[in-house]
Image (cartoon, rainbow, N blue to C red; front, side, top):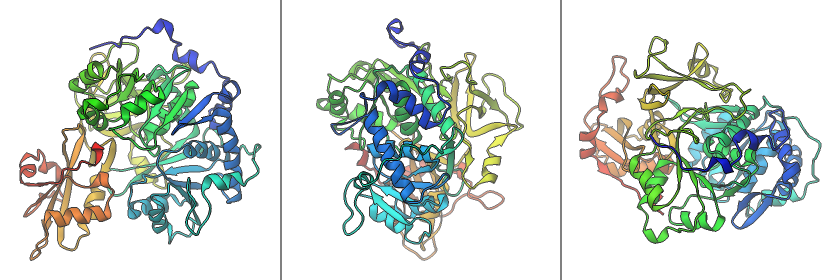
Length: 548
C-alpha cells in the first residue's frame, strides 16, 4: 500500500475547483457557458500547434448548430462520427447537445462491415469522418435510406462536397437554439457484448457531466491542468475523462490525433502536458521503447491507467519520473465508479474503491459482490460485481431485453467477478462474459467467431483471450476445418484481415480436430482454458503495429 507524494496544501480541493464556476442544470450547454464566461480567452483545446480558446469553441459551436439544423437534424437524431482525434469532435459534442441530437462515434480503423452494423443499428442521419476512412463510410452507408450524407472534417472530397470546417463557415451562427436537456441522450457508445454484435450504450448529458466532474476528484485536477489526450475520442475514457475532465476543471485539452509511442515523450514535453490517461498495453510499450526517445523535460505529474503492475509502477516512477499513477476500473455502462484514491492509500493491482463526485450532495456510487442467488457475499469471497451509480447508462439502444437482463433488483450486473477486502478495495478475478480485453478495448469473441466462421472451409471456430506480455489479453482462435479442405492458419489470418479491424485480428491461430461443446451444443469456451497447450501448437502472428 502506498500514498502519492503530493503537497495538497498548495492545491484547490476538487469541490473548490468546481465551485469556481456558476452552478448549472446538468445540460452540457449550461455547463459549458458557466465556464465560458470566466475563461473565454483561455486555451480550451490545443491541437497540432493551434489553439482553440473557449470563445473560439463557442463561436464554432454556433456555426455547427446552424449547419446541423440546415441538414434537417432535430432532437433525438443520431449523427455518426468515424474520425481520428480532432477539435471538430469537441465542437460537435457541444452542438449536438444544444440541439438534443446524439453523437455516435465509431472506430476509424473499423472495416466497412463493422461500421455498417453500428450506423444501421443507430439509424444515423449522416456521418462525419476523417479523410482516411471515407471510402469505408461510403460503403457502409450506401444502402442506408437514413444516412443521406457523408462529410470529411478536414480535406475537400474529390468531386464532392467541401469539408466540414468549410461548410460551417458558410453558415450564419445560431445563438438561440437550446433544445437539449440534462436527461437528453447525448451519445451512444457501441461496446462489444457477451454474445453477438456490439450494444449501443446510451448516456445522458447528466451522466456525461457527473462523470466529467467526478474525474476532477479522481485525478485532483487543477484550474491550470493540461490534459494530454492520446486515447481515441470514440472511447469513453477520452470522451468523458480527458475531454470531460478538462472542461470540468477549466483546464486545457492537449489533443493528439493518434497515439505514437515513439513520439509520446516529445509531445508531452512540447505541449507541457501535466496529466495523461493511457491503457496498460500502451504503457508497456512505452516502457520498452529506446531510451533516446524519452524527454526528461516533460511535465507529466499524474497518469491514469489500469491495470498496473509493480514493474510498470517502478518504471514510470524511477525512469520516467511520473510521481502519481492512479489505477482504476470502469465500464462504458458505468463510468467513473472505482479508482484508487488520489488522496490516500493505493493498493497495487486493485480496481480501487468508491470514487465519489466532489459534491457531497450527489449520491455516491454503490457496489456489491453478488453470489449467483443475488445475495451479497461477505468480504473476501469472489462473486459478480454489481453497481448502482448516478453515472449509469440510460440503457442499450433499441435493446430493452438486454437492458433488463443487465439488472437485478436495481443493480447493474457487470459480468466481472471480483472480491472486496476489509478496506473496501475491490480486486478483479475474471470475467463471466465472452469478452476479450485487448489494447483497452472490449472485444466480443462471438463477433470474431461469426466473422471468421463465415469462411466456407471452416466448420466452426472459437476465440478466447490468453495472457499478453503487454498486459490484458491476446486473441487465440481455434479452428476446425471442414472435411476435405486444406485451409491453413495463414489463410485464416488473411480472411480475418479482410473482415475485421486490426485490433480484432487473432494473434494465435491453431487448427484442431474438434471443439468441446455443452449439452445444448454451444461451444464450451471455458474448457479451452488454460490454453497453454493450444498456444504451443498455434501459429503466432505477432504484430508490431503498436510499436511505432
